[in-house]
Length: 357
Image 1 (tube, helix red, strand yellow):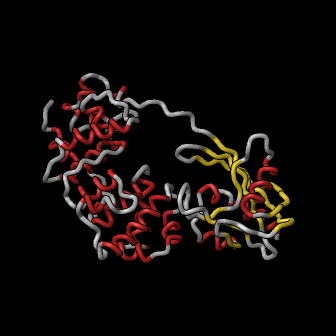
Image 2 (spheres, rainbow, N blue to C red):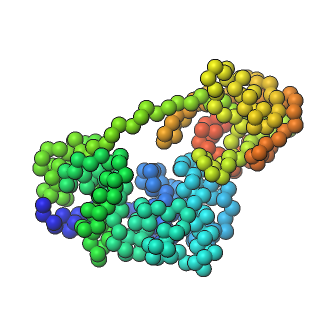
Image 3 (cartoon, one colour):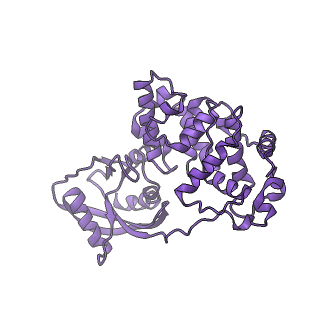
């Protein structure tokens, strides 16, 4: 194997890198925000979010001082909301423990909430020049092809082995560029399907290309079938037309976001019966389930939901909840962070509210 391929890769990257907003100013803060956003999210999706987020919170200080609900609102629709909560908390830690200066040493940076191996390697190499290889999905795929590695990329050991291999290849003087180039190559040329091998700068060094194994690599064990859950939610209004919403627990899926009350339909339940049970469990009230507002489909990373919203009225009981709740007008809902699935209800809800009022 010709060891000159990192040099070829860097030369290619210099002339072919995409013009991305976080590459225009490589401050540690901007790189950090971008890398958090880019985890499990496409570049094209991230770009407008990055612009809005940086405009709202241009420094680690402004982010730390912000209300978490405002941070979540700017993150709304980007998904994986734990990233936003951790980033916000990490900014607070920077202000509290590091006098407002984001640490540029890996061992200190790793102490911040939400900073794992990937974020640490990316930020410390790109913004601070530490020779730590970044291993994301694009890099896993590309390296397996370059070296014709028959590793299962779904296994944690594969990530460690590839990181160790790249630690021997990463240039000490340009670690950030090398990492970006590896990710760029995987994102634009060494793609999962129909890779552009003819335009690859290191095609002559690629063992998978030489052995005609490109379409067979990388190896990835099959995922289990994605489960689908039936969900019901209640749109409960008061005499002035305000709607009852509650805030999800800080920890867990969609933590800190507001939503309509409801939950999963259990085996053997009808949708109205499930909603009555959920309202009693969550709100300590009995409800009359009225007309169906809409049914929507939504996919998360590990499961899918089929969600039906019903217009409901409280018939008895004293409204009580272990979660924060409030009565909100439609314009209030627009200003609060809501899950995307709940947002899909709003167009139909606007129509039914005209009828209700």
